Amino acid sequence: MDSCGSSLVHNASNSPESSLIGGPIQDNKDRCALANPITYVDANDPPFLILHGDADPLVPHCESEILFKALQEANVPSQFVLVPNGQHGPGLFVDKYFRMMTDFFTTESGITSVDTEERNTPTKFSLSQNYPNPFNPSTTITFSLPTKSFVTLRVFDSLGRVVSTLVSEEMLPGTYSRQWTAEEVPSRTYFYRLQAGSYVETKKLVLIK
Image (cartoon, rainbow, N blue to C red; front, side, top):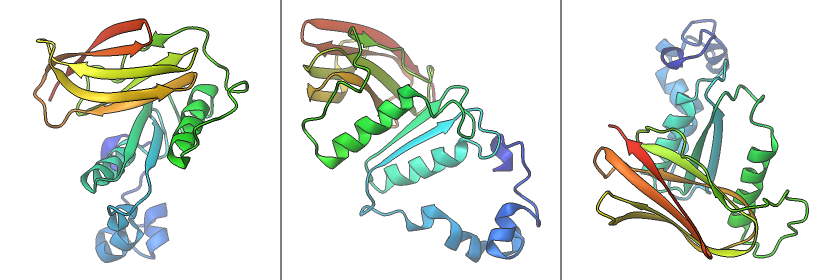
């Protein structure tokens, strides 16, 4: 944790982590493994939505990136969202991310009909620039729907070939985010296109490995 941006010292014999396991973490690697959530990741885990601020002063966001990678390797449905300027709580508990959480639980619960009057329904279709951009290997794409629509969100290469289909379904009004993990494609500029009814918008993203 100390190597990727925390303002606290975790790699010490009197750190909170060492206190948790009852001794210096360097001398008790077996205990560290028992306390490490990644030890228990397997394909039977439920889907994960991970939100982490890129300015978190206590827990660096690389910890969530490591968890997300382990979940992906175990084929656990998971999404990682790096929140710009988010701290250890502040910046994450706002309407945008509350809606993202609500959409996630609604989707995973199998609910097909919800009351949208309290969801701050968007007034127009929109497709946001992906974040981060450039990226490696994952980036998040956010879009808004003012009406119930059949939605497709696809990534294309410069020749117009479909690289990935992120969405192809009917969706209720709201703001949604989808993550594209591009581990198996080469570095280059790609394009992502949102089509919802007659609305079509395309933006470009850059993968740098």
